[in-house]
Image 1 (cartoon, rainbow, N blue to C red):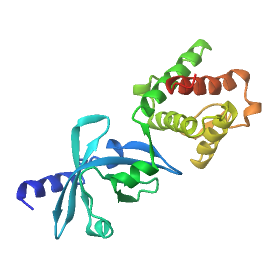
Image 2 (image 1 turned 45 degrees about the vertical axis):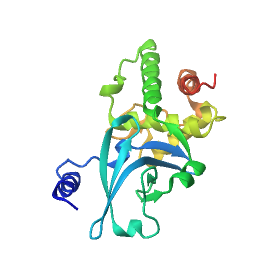
Image 3 (image 1 turned 30 degrees about the vertical axis):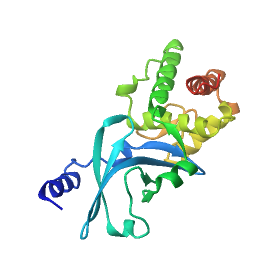
Image 4 (image 1 turned 60 degrees about the vertical axis):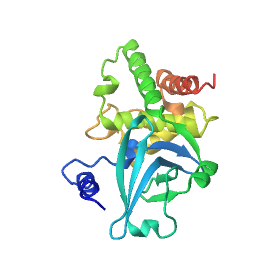
Length: 224
């Protein structure tokens, strides 16, 4: 392996913020479970280090990034251009041959975040119409709030028949798992939220927010 390739590995492996995590450049796919994946466009093998894979970023075709695959990852299969580098929810990374991956997974596309942004802005406009100006624009919203919107979109992608009540239950389960609890006033620092109650106990205007969220997702996916 030449010095130029080694320098790329060192740059990609530094601990001072230089590392771009592969989750940021992968598309989302759905089988019986959701994964993230990126196409391998090149593989440079080294007997000592393993393989330096070059992966393509789905949302930015001109962007290609290195990923160093250790020897134990290559024990069963040595990748070639066109195969996939796959990231699972628990952080496990593997390599999948092109044919096997594409037969087993369906892409969710790269527009999940864009749909989540539209849902967020719809919710912000709805809240403003009710006199609540506390919601920030997407670009200024805290990361937990943006991720919650993304998770809501993914829920409706994976459960097309789910109604607004199921969407609320999924949101509430996520909040409870993250340590949130019911509180009469929304307080992100204390992780309290007035909507952590059964769907039927929500005020009608809050129930409407779940219906509007689902409607935006369905519209963007061409379901309505």
